[in-house]
Image 1 (tube, helix red, strand yellow):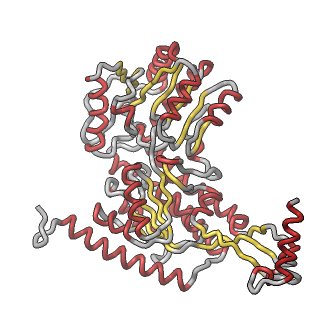
Image 2 (cartoon, rainbow, N blue to C red):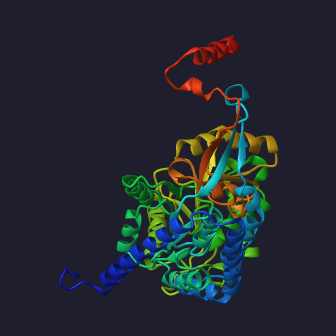
Image 3 (cartoon, rainbow, N blue to C red):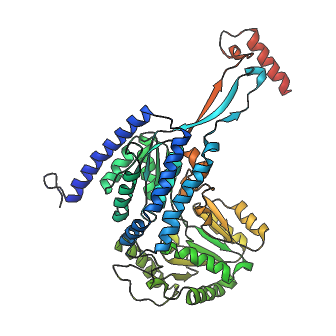
Length: 486
């Protein structure tokens, strides 16, 4: 047991990490004050260096992910964790000239003469990024792109659940960037708590709503603006005409990414009641024909820890105990504690009070919920918290458009799932319980910028009318305004 006299090794390590965090933040604050507005060319250079960093460390990223997850597909590492951020950085560098340009705003010449107004994006300062374990590089380096594009200094806190990735990220960042521009703070729970107590100029947290609530409270104490990318139960609504092999393939393919450990994975499906069995049969056929031996293969990501594996097993055990129709899509032995791989399991029409219908699943369990009318399906979605993402499968575009019109979610995809989250040009974020704020694209650039409104006085204005003592000029302005209003 740790005491003040006999601290544990983890406590000592966190103490050193907290001291280092303080040094990092002080260093970056001084650098920001000395150079608060990096040039367009400097920012583009940073983004180019970031893209090059990801490409040159491809094999090390693959190895670190496999170390932390037990099993992690190399191709998934390439597609999502390497090429995703590299492409996003290239896109931002190409767009940055238009993003950073001042935006003119309207000015009434009758009042302000030849004066002009514009919005000028400026860096916020020193920005913190608390990263989850499920995408250790995409969710650390990804948002870093818009943070650097906006001209900020950045400190990244990786998850303690992925220590190999955290150590590699720190090495990569320190090889590529000056520490007063970007740095990484590695540590456990005490460092995470200290991180939230820093008076950041902006803080991004990606993770669960429960922790996000605590992050928001801590940030509020310091009046720190926050972006919260949280979870939620992302539904897929399949309409009558879309219970087919392609729709089910899209759903299962998305569920298989990271073995369900993705915040915009399909958390549950809503299916017409008379098509439940057809959905299950198509899913089983797809698993047999296109995913044979999936959960023992190198394509199946391991569950990140035994703690998380046991939670998923408890959700399935609870469903069995309640008499639910649970259908694993393949026969599989008990999971190995080293690889921690599980098959995808359907749970057919579970009751609403079941634990897996109350919690974000974050694993390879797919509830398939029956509905009797599309109206009921929409009501089911709207009766819960707003999801981070919503998916609609419908052949009729007017139907999918109606579902989108009558629901609210952070993002959405039609006749696909999670694709919106891969596009560098689309904003990514939640709504309500699933988060606030955005990163990706121009919206991410603006999220991490101070959008300063600027007025430049010209000639021939009536500005003096607004200041006392009020006289004929002010009265003339008032009379003219009321006369124009009718």
